[in-house]
Length: 69
Image (cartoon, rainbow, N blue to C red; front, side):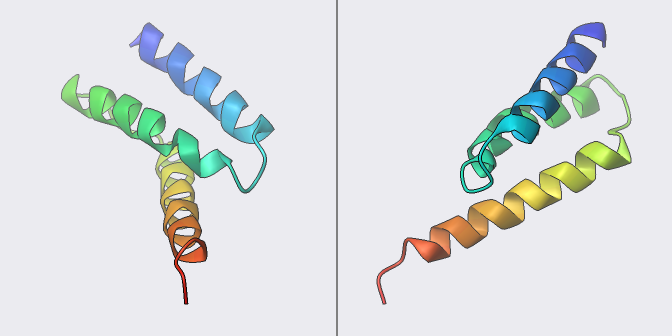
C-alpha cells in the first residue's frame, strides 16, 4: 500500500502542475493506481475518485474539441 500511496501523491502533484488542457492525459495512470488499490482490497479515497471523475470529464471534452464539425 505504501508504494500505491507514494504513486498517488506523485500523480496528484503531476496533475496539479500540469497545464489544464493537458492534465487529462494523466488519467490512464491514475486509473491504473485506482485499479491496483481496489485489487488489493483498499478503499479509494473520495478525493481520488473525484479527481478521476474530473480527469475523465476533461478527456471527453478534449475528444469533442478535436472533432471536425
